[in-house]
Length: 143
Length: 430
Image 1 (cartoon, each protein chain N blue to C red):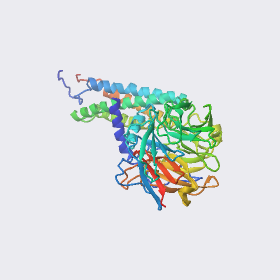
Image 2 (spheres, chains in turn orange, red):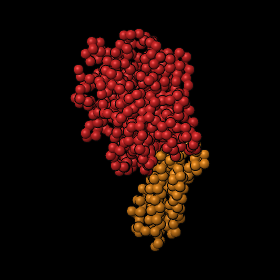
Image 3 (tube, helix red, strand yellow):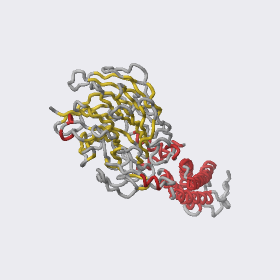
């Protein structure tokens, strides 16, 4: 890997392969939870809610590990601002709200609703944003 | 990966769980309990009392009474039966095969197991005998084994009836027998799929014609789907001769012990109600069981209090729900019921003993004792009286957990303790 660093690159360590897989994997897992919540909301069929619970658990696992990478990148960044900080904060918010969503889904039967559905929608949106920012192509930097 | 995440979640659950609601004893007991509003934070309260040995300690009983351990080292004793000759049968075991459907089930299962015995399910009946009447049960022998989580016991028609978690069976019995002569005969299959609540309680009509089996719901509050609740949360009436059954009462969430009132011949039950609506909801109850009666589960509790967690709801069923007779307090987990007799002494002669296994989902533990509910004219009358206590230490550890209670007509109360794997016997001093 060459080290052609431009003046405005605050991001010395763009997401590596594992980091990218974890971060990108978070998005469809939260999407799956959202879709299953919608299905439960429309049908009252409890199995959709069970699926949503496990997808959320998986999403939180991926998200939590990605968050660790993001934190390390933040610590190693020369300037702790800009993209690297925004990405970390977005992912942190995703993780925390996702955890709240997990607990919401641990309630029995319809007690999950409607908060569970709303939370899943918000968390999915946040995870998209976090991945969008975290995986943004870096001008001047080399991967 | 799943496992890792489970433990992460569990850690957070424990941390957050530590700051739940405060814990005064705000339990409403009696015929007309005041019910608070439903509440459920992000996390349900869980408080598992760490088990500890009895050592040389014993449960506390009222003045004028004594308690002794008549059998120890059992394999999860649940319910007991006093035979006509005074021998005591103990049903031992643990059942259930409910799949863990959500991450929550994995976590809750792990935490709850901390408050239970580590002993393996006995799946057997043990017979205890005090041949010389000195109060020491010198004979302890296996009456029958290879049963499937036996729980409810009854004696009638010269047979011992045993409610396994999947089947009602009977053993032919002759006075003095210490071991079953043959494998049990099937009386009726019982609903056993999933078996979220696996205990099958049992009693028999005074004439021996009908057996009554309590079958618990397959979920807390329909979180396994309504399809799983077919034939659940019911008391069955089973014809002893033919094995034919009909639902005798429905909507009765978890009827964990059944008993016939000795004077009126009326069927009574202790019932465990739903969780996760707050520390003081929903009261477990003692009730007469009316033929054809619907007791609300899952749509409503204590009469017409609608449970919004059940969707779609059923207003007609809610309107039809019977209000139970007597609140025992929420989360006490009543598992034992036996009507008293004159031999128990004047103060405790008329009424019902109730064994309370104790709470696990309430910050301030409740239950963990045997109470006496006074009766007059065949109905509960007045506040309950503590009869056997001391199952928890002052430091908050748990020595034992009462399950089945049985009045011995010779003037004793038999209490099964499934944490200490002990059977206690409370007698009046003479």
